[in-house]
Image: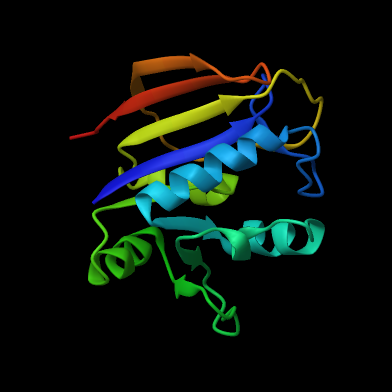
Length: 173
């Protein structure tokens, strides 16, 4: 299973404000995410990301994305309609494989990103770097005991000034 992590962030690695809002990100980031999710057919998010996006964004949210949706949550009471719930990163991959997917798009939050990376499950990372700096907020990765080396595949400048970096993750043996 190929796992591609896609995230939009500020120049200094912030993916959301402390309350989870992403108002500093341009609409182009959402369009890129939707296009990637549709191409891959399946995306994975964390429960906290799901709940924050559903609470804050009424005009567009994950319900509108044309792809299979998997939310990772350890809560037994969590079962949103139209979404598959997985208990862990490996369970999310298993559930995607069981319905025929060969790749998934991982799109956070920071704890889930770290969990996938720590378990050596991420193959590629695509980062949309928004031309903005925030002094506080949620980082791309939650602090944890892991380290990975990357190899740059491609750099692209998008219309709104976003720089997109595409990396291959060097796997830990």
